[in-house]
Image (cartoon, each protein chain N blue to C red):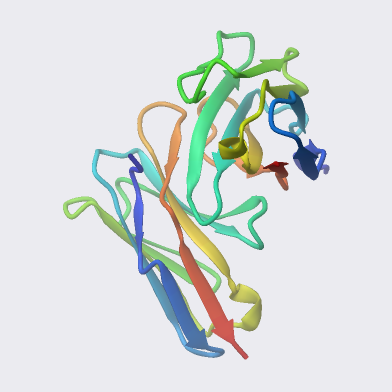
Length: 114
Length: 110
């Protein structure tokens, strides 16, 4: 079946602009995660959605970052007033419920802020 | 700070050789997972080992876990050029969160 998809695959934006990144999880996966990966680094947890529960936003680096998810489907990550330090690959993953051990990752969105 | 720390940061070997990567972590875990990442994009799950397991095999992969030393190793046998990638360990505690290390960049030269 279809895996996790993300769009756009690449995004170049000017400093100060807002960007919206999209993630389509695997159908039936109730848990969805966003991560940020800076060049040559590991993954930083940003936010977690599980069904209709309140999301865990503890990893969001500033109030310029926000994310939404409609039910158990699409999620969008919004970065307002982008800064150069926001340049990174943003990865989305989904899993079967909160007890799902294995996470399935999308291909990521490479964001470049100029 | 990162829970998992991989060692070495980079490893270069010849095709056919074995590659060993290590991961250390700090707090108690439910399980430890290894992922592969090609070209800085999406990660692919390779293998999971639970805290009550000591060794696990999957094809050319062998993972060990020593909870007393809070460490794990990933062995790739008979490496191929296609194994060239970054490898990350990720630890899972009681909750849903996976905490990733910075990864080992493996280069397999043909």
